[in-house]
Length: 167
Image 1 (tube, helix red, strand yellow):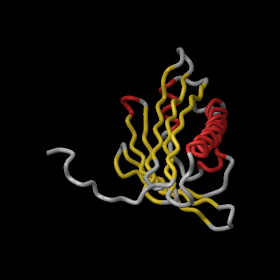
Image 2: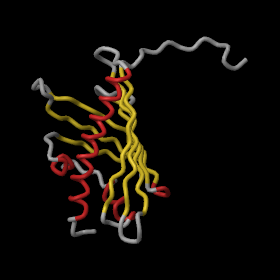
Image 3: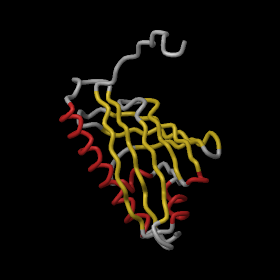
Image 4: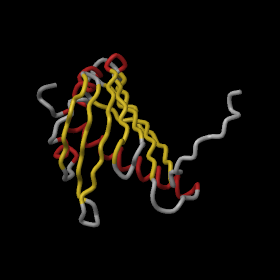
């Protein structure tokens, strides 16, 4: 009978922060989507950060992003993401398969916002595996902080996209 078998024991994440935001682009949806999924090794420059990226397309709709960034402790942090692209819906899903946010998942969708504009609908779920288990209040504060950081990054990307002469 379904539900009667004992569940396998998995290590529990110490934190699960869910958050969402919307970012408008003054670029039509089709062009914004193409710009967003044009993953390049030098994408770190657009973010204003430092790091390196290896981009490996394994199918026309699946890419592996292997990123290394400096940490505050002076070491390098490696994050590997498996990105599935769904062009028919103008969306993509990024799942962490290696790194400190293992199994975290981020969903992106580009929607039209009038004839010459669009918007990104972002949904994130970040899992953390180290540190103390957070209280509900601390988890909500973390989600707000992550949302603010990612939203700030996408505002920067919006400016870059809107000034891209190839669009």
